[in-house]
Length: 64
Length: 435
Image 1 (spheres, helix red, strand yellow):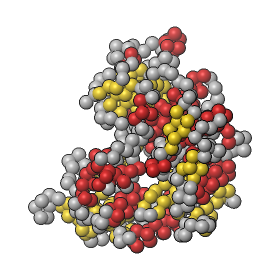
Image 2: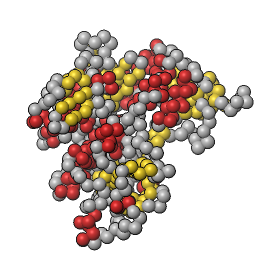
Image 3: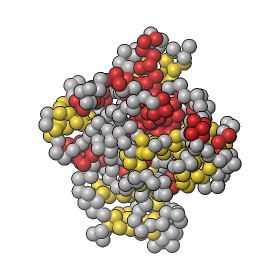
């Protein structure tokens, strides 16, 4: 799995952080920070959840 | 106009005669999942169905001529000149295409035959469904007494990209806008109009405006912010009509208030809330008291589900009031998809446990709200360290955090959302059950 985020469209909801805190964080303005772009398999389900709950659809996933 | 993307599924032919004998019932499981509404909630259902491994047919039906665009930008970025050329999709086209749905656009749903499991369309066709998802959304309430079917130049509503285009053109002309309704949408447009150098007035019939949604502290701060930026606020007074055509042009010239005053304006935006699109369900035998009333699993009746603005699903902190927010539509869609598949497999259904959340951006301020507001709650203001002017407000009932609001403090909000979830989740529901 490879993750990409489009920071410029982020609306700082923090929904991704709530879903997958090991993979996503926020800067002081709330904008998404990608902590790791190739997470371990045990994190994949939470990353898919994060992508699906993001209100601005800025997280894209390439599945291997 | 009917346009059909991908291939028409076999069940959309009007020759299909549903057979719900016992053999027919097992065949019915092979019929498509039909989703009425191609916006946030409908797309969220479709995406979650595929994510959970559903490989059957999905048919999406919408009365619009294509996917409705993303709505949060309509009151903000889409009103700036660059909004004319920017595409605001709910999800990127590549993600929609991966869903391999059949989409029927320009087709209004007109009724449901629950027993035969048929969705009727305005063009006379019927679609057989295994499960039907109602995500037909809401539409803006019209200005009382006006007839929006005959558009008046300068009288606006804001729900679609086309609406935003008309408003963008008005603001680009340097118009002065009077906004009827001091809710989130009205205030966002007022802020955007000021940012574009236009005059803006907001007329709100309740004296306190958003206090019943955000709490008194942030509602007051927000109005102070608007005043500081030169927005004219008329609260506690009603707009009763508009002045038009005095100069012979037929154009809007001002907004008339109950006290007889006229607020001069070249354009009027009516932003007084929305009503659910449920008229087409009138004979379906559903409970339609302000939207489609559902159980906590998102089910209205067997094989009929609802999601998004149109749906009333009781949640952790709400008793099932309709919520017109994007995150809510996403959460509903995920819930309904998971439960629809669980019901087919004979597995237990999950309750709606997502904490309600919305945000609004006005001037240089981001306001975020999670959970519920109650006038009975204790409202506590907490400073946010390291961010000038930022605050968080906690709403507690009997010591339990039921809601929270922040002013320019997004990281604090993320923590508060987690805290509300933990405070409101039933003890026997571990966090892992939310997915």
